[in-house]
Length: 216
Image (cartoon, rainbow, N blue to C red; front, side, top):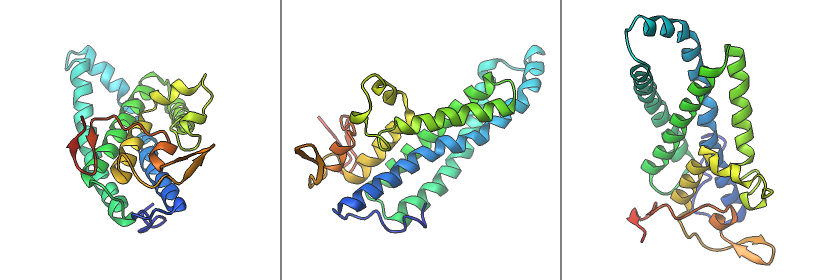
């Protein structure tokens, strides 16, 4: 990603550049949920050991889950730090690096939690490897860029609000473009919209990511 989008996410007002940067942020927000598939084997392979040790009274289920969250969370923080530094500085993204890292890291943690959920109900590793990609790919279509949220048939639009990657992508979009980017250059019928409006990115999150000021 760093090599493909090298220094392409500057402050250009060109329509193509803004669309390309939106795609870059979309992939940055989507890939962690796919990468979390690597965490499933630990749950599947540890399941017999977990059952035996739990029955022996070695620990409770909450204690086991808490340990797994802490263990994987620490490992994920290092991987997220390296990945976000390469993407953010290599592609020339704007806004706060801290918010970009936070969005990426939170998406990865949600992906790990989802991987754990799939691994806990799947009878085998093969079944787990089938179920998780099915959900992740389905979520791509409802994240808001492959098909804009306002263009999704109303009967399916509710699903976009359940996709955790969409919230991370919105955070990255607001961080880079700001909550009110100019100029409005994207045509939507008879209206001209800016990039945030074009993708229906929600801006009422209580914080301006460029000024770091609380919005009232």
